[in-house]
Length: 165
Image (cartoon, rainbow, N blue to C red; front, side):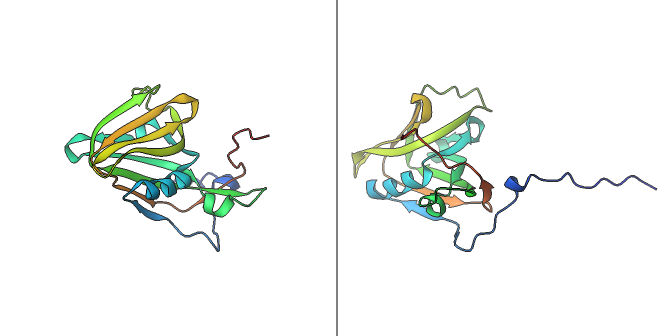
């Protein structure tokens, strides 16, 4: 008779969370106003450097991040709150520049503070501003971004706080 192992118990905070009001997001951004909405959704999203990808042949910059579900937690003072995995990609990207970001450190974690756009209808720069002063600048021919939640949400006790005391 072979040995059978029970699955390792999961911490209650890491289990998928059922919410009566959570709806997975699927957003597209085609101009600077749309990017402001995308920025608010991505505020405090965290990702590993290894989950960033610049695909020059496809003119795409993509990432997978754990985003805080602000649409569920913005008015709440106490947890549990939620995070969810989201896939994000920016198309029509012609060049990517980074500031204060070590791309070889694949396990390093970045924290997205905001997404901003400088330019016009004929292109410009989309900048992902990171905690600690880092940035990822995407030179684009047009604003063309997509975000989609790709997992069930999970609990987190902590709500991001930027020291506004």
